[in-house]
Image 1 (cartoon, rainbow, N blue to C red):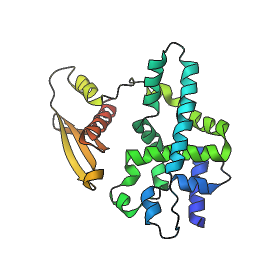
Image 2: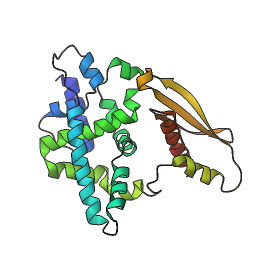
Image 3: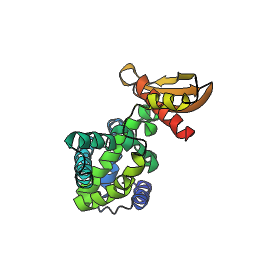
Image 4: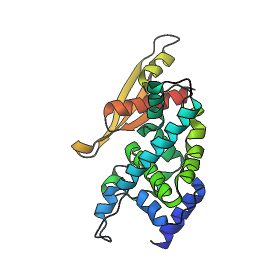
Length: 234
């Protein structure tokens, strides 16, 4: 590993409050498949998909254990719905963004051109991959501590507005509670090949732009734009 990359990852560890013996695991966790297969340095490309698989399982167990213990009033259906909210792509992408994981991702040229460091799917996968790497390096207790800091402690905040992801309906209810209002969703851009498009949509309320969102479908991007608009209206 190059010295500059090592220092970069050491800085990320300090930021996240992690100690890692093997920084190569963290490097792999932040290596997207697009970079791995474009790189000519390694005849056997290493990327983060296997670590993502592991991190997904660790995340699910930690969150499931916590909400089982702290939400005795919930039945299994309610617990499943809450867990799905807490471990979904949108929540994980938000946590990855807040902790600047995108700044440390290794992406192929194509993904860089598509602003892959801001792609919610790539960010969520990277978050899970980092969990997988930390689990392998430091064990279950340490990764539980990390998740307690980054996610578990913020459950009240993350669920303050409920766990319903229909932001478009909620935005409509908010802006029209005092009377009629015009809500318009407008496409800003669409990038990438037909099988892997990234859409950017914006939402305008009475002609004023209140939020933008990015997604793999127009509907997904509209929901994220509506979420940003709700934040702006608070």
